[in-house]
Image (cartoon, rainbow, N blue to C red; front, top):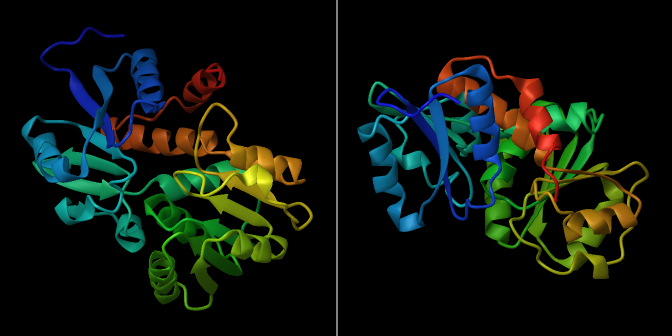
Amino acid sequence: MTEIDGFTRVCGLIGLPVAHSLSPLLHNYAYSRLGLNYRYLAYPVQPDDLQPALRGLTALNFSGVNVTAPHKEAVIPFIDRLDPVAAATGSVNTICCREGKLEGYSTDGEGFLWSLQEEGNYVSAGKSVLLLGAGGAARAVSYALAAQGINSLTILNRSEHRANSLAEKLQALFPSLSLKAALLTTGSVKCYLPQVSLIVNSLSGDPWPWEEMAASFYEGTLVYDLRYSLCRTGFINWAEKSGAKVLNGLGMLLAQAALSFELFTGVEPPFKLMKKVLTEVNC
């Protein structure tokens, strides 16, 4: 890795919490292998400190930052320019600092689709999907799936109002998409499980012990947990024991990180090397 000096460009991750993140590992490994004079750090940012933190990015000449929960939606009022996907989804996971301005992008959806297709061998068009959660990641993923031509989407969330709000936004963008929104309960999950071929969990935490809930899946159902804990989550264990195919969010992390890397540096990411370093990290 190059030595830090007065020309070193700084990138990072803002969110809360961020200590668990693998993004610094991925980005710094890629910088090192390509000999780029960049560093990537994780910055825990409280919600009340979000605006001054964003102002500091341009003042300190950051190259850019990734954005994770709980800030993916909250950053939008402070962004000078949004790319079309970020504007449509209402979610930003990548901010670039250019000419004193903040530019917001959403690479989550594209990263999710790469993982879904390459790792899950799943074709979205014409399928029925159940989405758990309605936050920033859920917005990006649901938009990406709708753009791929899914037939129906059911959104379950702990706040029914947020589920309805996301459904209304998607309906305006995709009038032919069959949409439902409801409160997340064990009853609503059990009701919709047999009706879909893809279940996406975007919840930051488990609403109940999944292992205690009996499940009946449609044959061949793929269950995707957007969380990328290297240890298996209770959600993943429950789904697999109930007969579903499972994926966690490591593939999505990899793909969205590669897209962000290119936005920050203007250099093609060493995708295979970044993938290799992820496979070498053990629980």
